[in-house]
Image 1 (cartoon, one colour):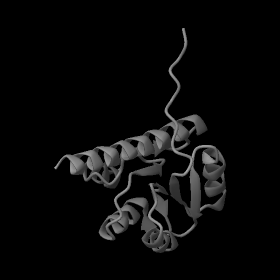
Image 2 (image 1 turned 90 degrees about the vertical axis):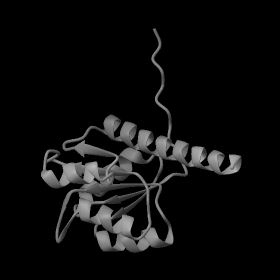
Image 3 (image 1 turned 60 degrees about the vertical axis):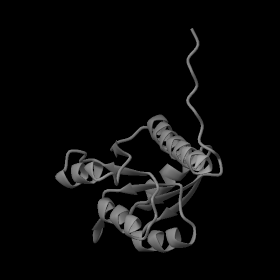
Image 4 (image 1 turned 45 degrees about the horizontal axis):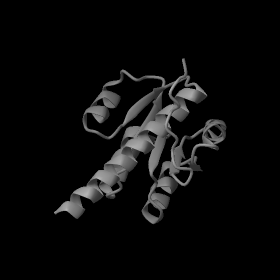
Length: 145
């Protein structure tokens, strides 16, 4: 019995990764190297500025950072009109703020620490694939009008 291969993300997809710990950024970048392009940010403000110039296809953000949370970063992105899927990495997936953000549609999926490389790649691939499908369907809908 053969297993169905997972869909692959387009190698040209751009994923912004935000974490205040450089070691975590390096690990995520290595894990996603064959899946997509990554840009890492140790500080959320620089990611928000970069996103205005070159909008990412996906954002992967740590929940706990100095002076902010990943949820606040995702809200700031949305306020700037940047609507892309987001993965939130946290050791505390049941926190009320995380639940509210998920209900608001800010988070595509919560990645619980410690995460495994195959699970991270699968979640990134799924989020990018669904976002690409949404854009395709939107384009088809506009063409049919």
